[in-house]
Amino acid sequence: MAAKEDRLASIKLTKLDDLFTTDEGRADAQREKVMDIPLAEISDFPGHPFKVRADEAMLEMAESVKQYGVLVPGLVRPKGDGGYEMVSGHRRKKASELAGMETIPCLVRELDDDQATIIMVDSVRP
Image (cartoon, rainbow, N blue to C red; front, side):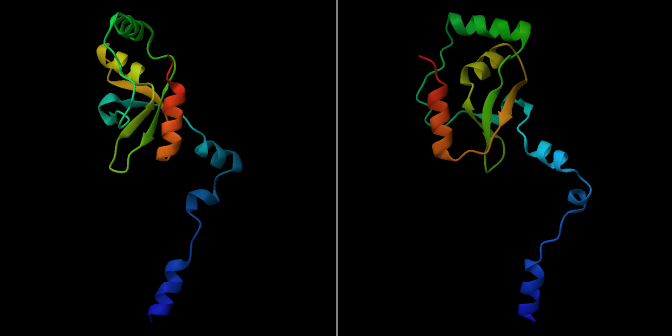
């Protein structure tokens, strides 16, 4: 009886939605999209080596965010326990917080630790 249950469990059925979508629709579902993510759901990258300073430049950036919004989306990765982790866009996130925004536009991308670290370091401007 156990062998029959194992065989049944190994059968993968196509989802009904997949039967009635086009190749274009499936490809579109795989594309990255900019999403407005609540700031409260985004934590900082652990061990982020660069400090985000609340200096005059940051206050100017916050004022710009108030007036125009965030023009370039941040990059986050989903966390296993829910929420997101900021990979690129720490200054934009801080400026959004100072501007009183509740969300920030972000791309959500699945990244392992090495990929996230490389992107995070490469995205920082001296």
